[in-house]
Amino acid sequence: MIHSQKPIMPEDLSMTFHFVNGQSRTFDISSPVEPDITRSDNRQVIRRFLKENWWVIQTAERTVFINAANVLMVEVNPPMPTLEGEGILHTELTTHNRSRDF
Image 1 (cartoon, rainbow, N blue to C red):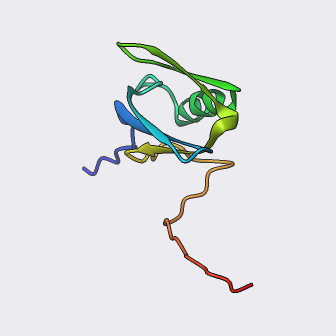
Image 2 (image 1 turned 120 degrees about the vertical axis):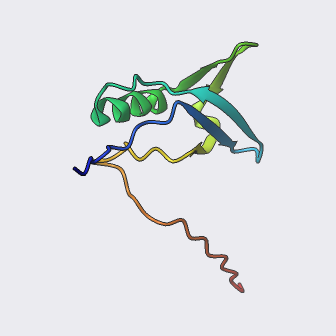
């Protein structure tokens, strides 16, 4: 018998916030979702967090408030395969360096 195993949200995530001033900060965090909830619920938890004007990261040592307006990009590792649906584009990362002569 073949069992199809659905992708699950990793228990621990590494989130790197890249700021407009060129700095970045990485946090290793526990998954913000429960393992038995649906993919849609997982997606909604992440989206609600990212829609806030201020993101709050709670660590054992401190509470960090991040102003979302100062963040250019957020990277999450490992990838979260459970994020599917509207607004999610699955693709390969490619970078092109283009120089233009003006």
